[in-house]
Image 1 (cartoon, rainbow, N blue to C red):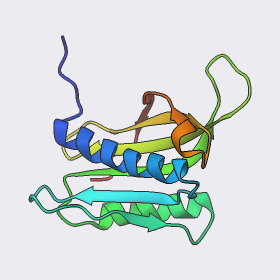
Image 2 (image 1 turned 180 degrees about the vertical axis):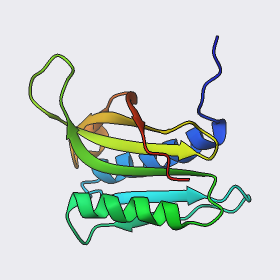
Image 3 (image 1 turned 180 degrees about the horizontal axis):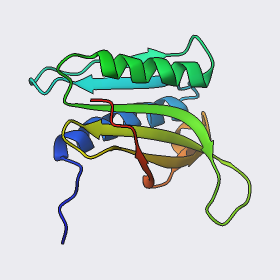
Image 4 (image 1 turned 45 degrees about the vertical axis):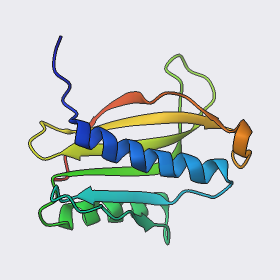
Length: 138
């Protein structure tokens, strides 16, 4: 069995950020673009939000933020969007995640479909699905 390119630390960082975003959506709170960069020094990484512009500009700002975090060894970015099912059909609401770690050949992306914005206990989401590779930012 091949070893996963995703370390336990990167998995924890990205899952924590995704969990925060899912909790917000369940509570009826819009999710801005969120970014976190881990310095790998044992300190608790701080989540930074980007919401004062269009989605594309906020994503650009989040990626620039991660690139500018000197000494960052891993990162995750999450944002609210839509994905099209592989077989076609209507777009579905999803949290989209980009994440990576120093030394990896690329960054990675994935998504979690959700439904029931603001419905607390009736809020539902799928397991994360891979969406391919993306630019590595550290």
